[in-house]
Image (cartoon, rainbow, N blue to C red; front, side, top):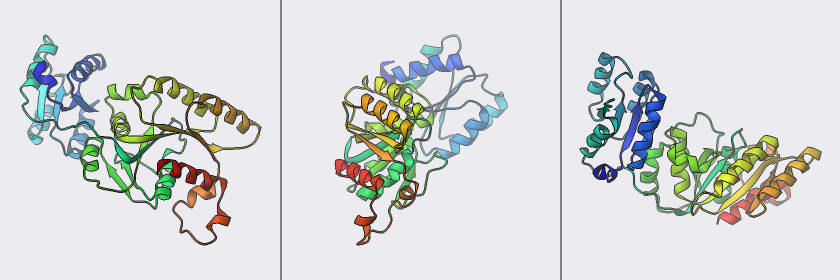
Length: 312
């Protein structure tokens, strides 16, 4: 086991039993391994392997699929290593197999970049990508987003789509200029390190390299509930980056004022900003600056400008 702990591996699990997969995942994480994908069936495994540019280790259960189908996959992807689980002596045999993989780490500790801000937010479409676009336009930053994100609003800033395992390598090539990462939705930040799914892996990497975080929550009752849960969990994070809380799509009717009060009560100990609902201003992201811009500025644009000044 000591040898396995020295090797930071990129693994894929292909295990039919969820209980068995949970036990194996806990064992692998305890040894410093990096599970980047959980294949629920052969079809998903077949679709994922061609998309990865890494040399992977696939840990599979013998009942995951038919023997002939598995042999076909193994023959097709010879650059990857396949390890079958031994049901009788699962832990010992798996550790012995991993210890025989003698190669350098593929994932390195990510250094925090002073010019990098990660935008995350609550579930329920609070506008994480829209805010990321607006901030990037304000500070002339490049946006980095996950390549597995299906849809995000168009941006006038440069957008680079990459996979989570490639983030560290890409950032090491960035010499200068501001960077904004579209981190996506998160509710319990401390659980992301133990989550095998691709979205959580992306989120974990995005937060690890950020010198500043921005958390976006929607100005409604669900947004406030999500924010309360996030804050309770966030206080358990060890040495987190500085964070700014944003209440997005704020309205100024009676209900809006109630939401505003709850938001301020929750985040009174942290920097916070309220973004008013302004659909036209959101669509004008990155528009050309003219001599009349000052007179056309809105509460929305002024708040985005306020965020940008805190990041510079």
